[in-house]
Length: 105
Image (tube, rainbow, N blue to C red; front, side, top):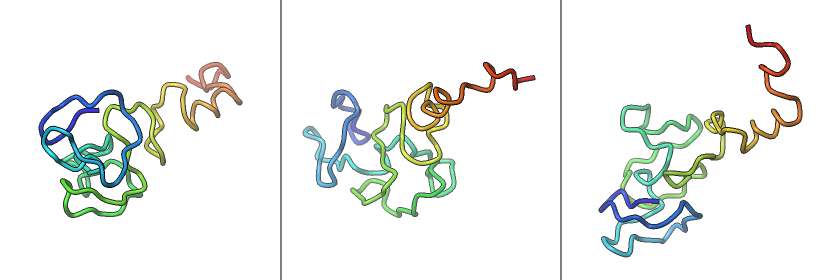
């Protein structure tokens, strides 16, 4: 995980508490700017369609869909390209992928 405020590398992505701050610059870590779903050009600047609107993207918030940037899998519907992990990966392991069943044309 990297701080969106100052660019300090904070180690591998991990669970981030609501009151955690960057040790270097003091920026809130559980903010939209540090979330993997944050995208300035997207609706509400978030790629997670079920997330509630957050006005201050720099401040800590209570978003249920927060996933530290750099994490390969997340919660919600946006984890579809998970490369075999998460819910989609579990379903593909259980039922097989479309290509192994001959459904891709």
